[in-house]
Image 1 (spheres, rainbow, N blue to C red):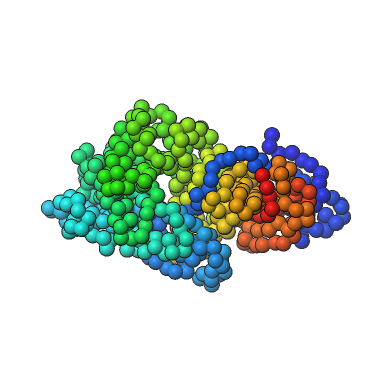
Image 2: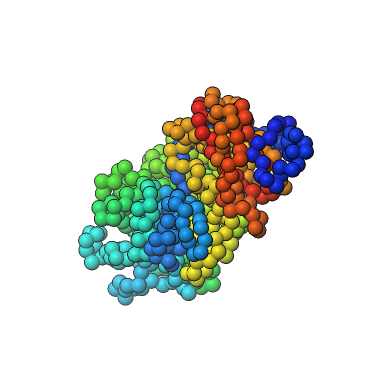
Length: 494
């Protein structure tokens, strides 16, 4: 019901399509999408990535920080890349350690990959004083140093998160999880200690690192199977929490932050693997009483389900006055087309105010930049698809209704600029963008900035074109097959 075919005049056609247009005189749009500025789907906070594990492997690298956290044009490994300009950073408070405590040592199986062992700051339980010998603030230097490089390039939203409590807080000293993956591995008497650990790191970062975490997320995918059984394939830190335990650690984290004069710092809730489990946990969880809900400042969710009722999660969370972050996303498609489809669906129905890649550098097909055994490899088409969104939809813009699931729109009320990012998943087609619902949709004949990324092999990679014009209250553009395009329209008024 959201697509229809119309006849319109043509502007903004790539050179390869011009012969067809000249012969016909006019062009048939495959569909029209009408941008609706009356929709208000939230003020955009930003784009980002988690630092663990790639930053733990690579350490602080200036050119990589430029590529990820600035919008400069960067010379990187023999290529010229548009900086992504990410401003959201998720920092992982580690659970691993090499020290011995009263004869106890961490018990990881070989499946806990070395670069996924994030060294924690609290060495033992003897003292909660961060200045005591129980704490090692020189730990985890690589991840922390990259966070500083991100901050220096403009990153301004930081979140502290935990995959597992410190190994010595656990029932089996193994940060991969309990022997039975659906059992909480955190000892019953250590819930407050785990919350205090995170709150102490947050306070220390405020006092000594020049970093203020906007939020603290005490769990990661709490309903998942985090197992340390002998034959478990688990290769990372993780801890399962049943619903009562999830509610408890949220309340404890809120209390420990307050005790350290960090009442302004939010506790992020849930961090579920997908939206379906998040709906169930938030709306159908009797353990989430009024006090627990009040302790949650924002709901985080992960995007690995590739489905689920996004609208349902948005509605139940919005009813409690909370925002949503898509706090982790990843897929195995190097082209970026799967990413673009899911991102568009998220902005259209989930309405997050920030969207975060899990690993911006990752192995095989998962990363926008490939990272294998600590070696940086190919820059995938996925990187340039992300550039279409990240470089143009910026913090402070209002997300509005682009009129079609294959498009997203954002409005900059300060500069009176409209940004549209649209995706063509199939063969080449013409799309008509109707701006008639704005009171002033740009000046007739004004140039529209157009950027294109073709995801097929040999396609364009974030190529700029000065060939698209406003005509009355609309514009048109031809999309090659499997292409993402971004348009910036100036002098647009509500």
